[in-house]
Image 1: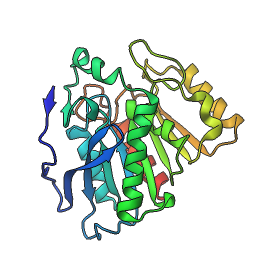
Image 2 (image 1 turned 45 degrees about the vertical axis):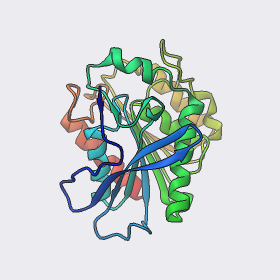
Image 3 (image 1 turned 60 degrees about the horizontal axis):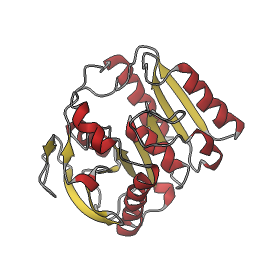
Image 4 (image 1 turned 90 degrees about the vertical axis):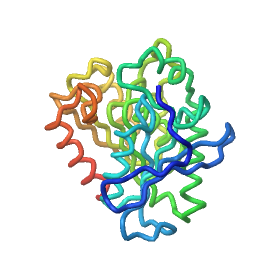
Length: 256
């Protein structure tokens, strides 16, 4: 496990501004990684997007996604959902024994506390309306993005291989959200990998059936050669053709 220095400035490959900032939540202070697009007034961004981490923390990969989105013109913020256990917590991709005691204790209400705080930060600090705020999440963040979309209005929400939406999982405190789809408050794009054994086709079929039964606006794209985490170029499961296609779809859908 790695712990970053609170509120440290992180170098960026582009000339945009990127740094950690701290905001208040009912459960204590929480760091946000914030990337500001080059040339934009950082006090008045046109569009913002909340980026939700995998189980490994707001690490280099998640920061690089914030950079990517900032380069596309979005103010990107990524909350540290592990802040109750300390600031700057990151894990290696094989550190599952270390991850579970922290990741496994997160509940739906705890995550909503953090997502509400991030959402209100964008609204109050930058005077953004819900029509200017989107969200994207990966793995556990993909689950959290759908959870948030059932409770908060966003412009658009993207969930990439979000597990746990249909069934309880051993050692993980998340509760399924599939029966809450009637409350969905934002258009939803779902991204899955066809080789992701943790999210079987039967789960995806049930998710789609529930969304359709409630006549909610959504799209679901399955990349046949993608496994779990196929969009992370720092994991062994990375599949570049699928990732490139998924990013093309995501950016087009967010801009539409």
